[in-house]
Length: 211
Image (cartoon, rainbow, N blue to C red):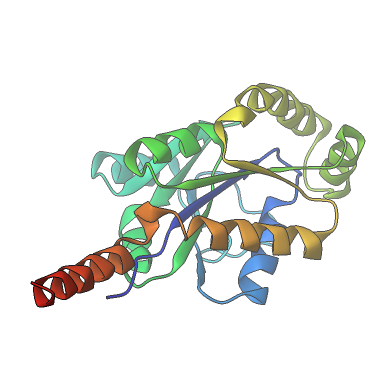
């Protein structure tokens, strides 16, 4: 019997490079499914609907909430973000590790529903590098950038509730580190139930034979 996949939530300051890091992870290593979130925020020029996010209007998002179709959702900088439930459960049952990019409020809601979730918080090496990354996007106004930095100050207060922090300085090294942490999480007893039950079954059979 095959063990289910595990749920991995990746959070971090806006501009820390979460999206790029997760794309590198799933391109370099097998066994991952990168969740596509639903959002009401406007689509950026380099994004594609259904791949970057499911871009919907506010009415559609709130209808999905009412129907119980989201694992979690939260409002961030004036826009809704949420995780579609059916797709996540399907991937976990197939044995894949599902990677979710979620801000801190949503991550903690996920842990309430899935106590064995692995929470990873991505951080830049320095505050100056964070500012540089936000500015270099060239897609957001100074007002939006300031809003994201203020939000980062709030999020910094919740980092201790995560399992690990990952400093995104060198992209390749950071992806390898994240992969190692996820592989290690698979060895937790709660994630090896199929293996444990099989071992118990064999031990019981052995014990019966010795009587």
